[in-house]
Length: 212
Length: 218
Image (tube, rainbow over all chains, first blue to last red):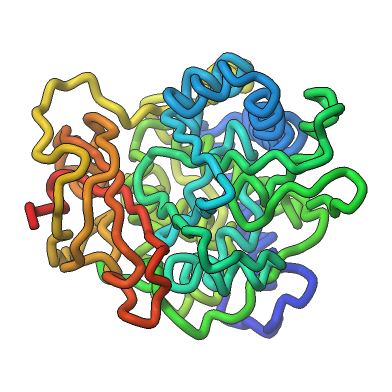
């Protein structure tokens, strides 16, 4: 795997070294033959995280918190239990903490050491979250990182960066946008983006939002 | 270990490239590498902290040049070799020399149940906390050659206990096969200026999850 001629990976963040594809296939065959893995279990794992578990789960948690003050109180007090009420729990989300954004406090989540991320509510992390630029700078220059993501915060807002160095997993509860009083819980959930639950974006009202 | 994986505070890594409508996986091999790692991890031959430490031991230049799931692949190969589940020759040739006998094998029918159950790091042990919320602390200046979840950028820095999360596995020993060493885990608040100097925002802060063994009273 030394012939790394695919330098900048432009537009394809996951581009493999040339023989990685073959290497993974060979390893899978070997592990299956040796009785270490069940190929059907591999398919089930992939299907789970590609089609069943993703940021729509987290969006439902956020929308519920926006419309139900009692739920929000439970969510901020004991996030793991409150999130489990909606059926989301388990691997990489065993101990959840929800961080509430307010007009004066903005929370941002990173994992500087690896890629810790709340899988049951957000699915698998995007490439940028796991990449060196974000991991290195989120703690050092969070306002610069947010600006790069299109979010300019006033100086009087306190930025709190949460470095996920343990098995506790963090989910940001973004502020409910204005002009959404008439929306249903389901319609609100449609507004909530993955990036807003990591803390690199805010939730915008339906008329001007761009989804991510 | 003071590895390149411990990136907090570094410069020069480039812009943050967010991809619109990013797929969960970009290539079929990423799907397989992901699932192989999760399924093989269920063998019970190593724990999640050992898996993290395996990736940290990828040589620095290669670590930085590898995509995310390439790191997973390299880490998985290392774990399989170190636990003796496969041999170097088997990986190089792709031909098995014998069967492996792992403690467990993840079956398709159990995937849903296993994922919902998770692998809690919280422990029922009754261990007294060394600190309480509000206490002033200083992160120890530790530089172990093994695994640690104490990032370099907070070592020797002063902060305050924000929350006590209760008793958890201590990854620094767990990754090295030295036991769970149950102890309290805290969220510790460090002022941005304490970490980064007078040019940092006076208002901002970084919260880091640290264990009793990472902290001293300040």
